[in-house]
Image (cartoon, rainbow, N blue to C red):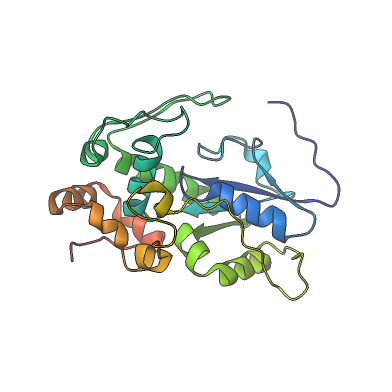
Length: 242
């Protein structure tokens, strides 16, 4: 990759996060809502991959890490790569049941301009490994913050204010009225049985609506595979069948 030339007086931000955690959404939010701010997309590593260009974390670039509840994330990536597959990227899950996907070995296809492959015993282990890696970025630099997809959706203004304060950004709006964007892939778009009008993000994320896709056995399997230290540090809890 050629050396990147930073523009003068531009605040650069690099976003990392797994697929379906809102990286495109947050990129759009930052670019729209803050002055002289630019999100780096193809510099400093693939946004869904591993961080492999140490100089990017330094004087000129801040880093934001996005995480999503692993139970909700498993369902999101399954729908994206399976029943509602639109792009020919990632594992082909069109003929794979959700439970099989969760339990089987995870094999992630090589992406364009990404010179490595991802393998894990199952997608839960993939979540563990990648999120732990993203957490390690935060430990390397004080100019790195971690936010969750859930709080970005359900506490939008507070999360944007937090980014403003931590990253020392200058909002476009003098009265701090942040602009919502359309690049949010809601579960209503993943599940053909749920319409946009029916979708309630508070019910789905805060009241654990995603658990309806889990049997008792599958939930116990996921819990047995999750790294409890990682999930706790991300602010999540081990789920139990209600």
